[in-house]
Length: 256
Image 1 (cartoon, rainbow, N blue to C red):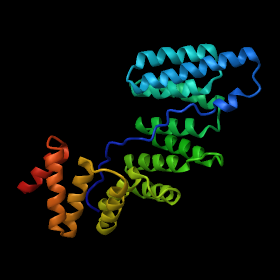
Image 2 (cartoon, helix red, strand yellow):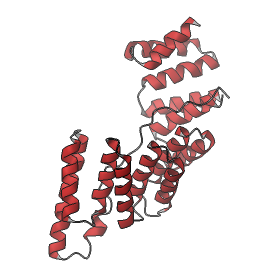
Image 3 (cartoon, rainbow, N blue to C red):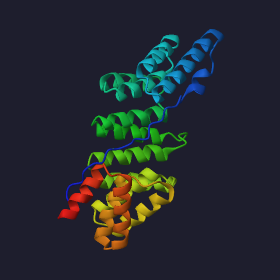
Image 4 (spheres, rainbow, N blue to C red):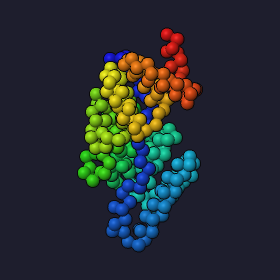
């Protein structure tokens, strides 16, 4: 194997949705329905503030949502994502646990909680959440939980488990860019260079080059001896990402 695998920075597939709202709306009397609507509106506003980067306003709206309806699970789940974003894992953890206590079978909440756990090094617990998420027969996108389980395993350095989860995800949806790119990375690390090239090519059919993918392409083609491909990838990397770590590594490798 080509040295110890170094985990790449991961972009986890976080779902900012109001999963479970329809369930909570059932069997509500008018007063409770009014409070639920207030909670829903404030949670939606909080998500909008989060997307704009206004975390404090998002917190305010989520606290208002919980004040209006303490049983509105989506507010706790969203608050968990928000607290994780600002580095307050303990608060994130408490809010996710409350969301899941209220809706134990909500796959979106379980998936998001799994991502937060993995980001904070709790890999085994994160994998447990992903497994629970995809065990729900009503979960419409189990490939998302499988993809995140693979990313979590990859970050933990368990390439065999990561590859297994990624393969299962691609069985459901063969066109997930993040998964194809990571399969190319794993194949390269395991010295399977032709499959690595194939996964990278499949990634490029649906995704765009990044500094990371270009540098990966260079290293793959160096092993396969395609000088034209090396030159093409190198030119794109130096031109489009001159200040990236990958370009620095490329330039340093040319000196050897």
